[in-house]
Length: 156
Image 1: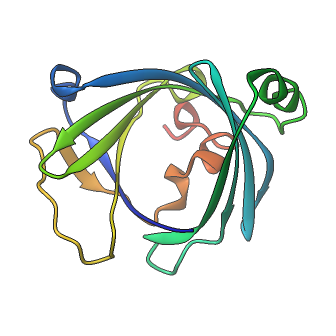
Image 2 (image 1 turned 45 degrees about the horizontal axis):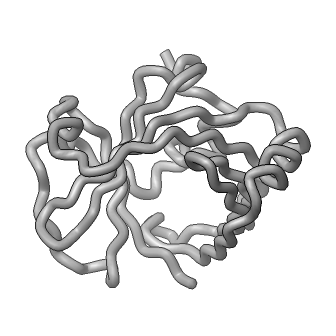
């Protein structure tokens, strides 16, 4: 249940041509405490409840527990979420033996595009596609829980 991932800015929309899947996502946070976050997500026609622990010092790993829940339950829980619902479209792109998840954000985070890759170990090697930009792993302002409080459009 330990998730290891790295996060990057995206420098072009070339990933769209390479994507094998895309899904609309809405998510809110029942709790955004730095020690743990509790997220409710609507992904397509499915709901999910996710609990994430505090990140490691380098931001690459943390405890994650996720359970699929009914869409109706997820919609009801979204009404209880703290202010700042995240809306995004996720593209999935296979690069080598890995899958990158690229999120295009909307609403108050419009213009932000982030790519994440899940790894089996912190030092696992992976191919870097041409659209992958600066690494932002561990920079908490790019965490979805923080984007819901301090959206991208307020950074400028």
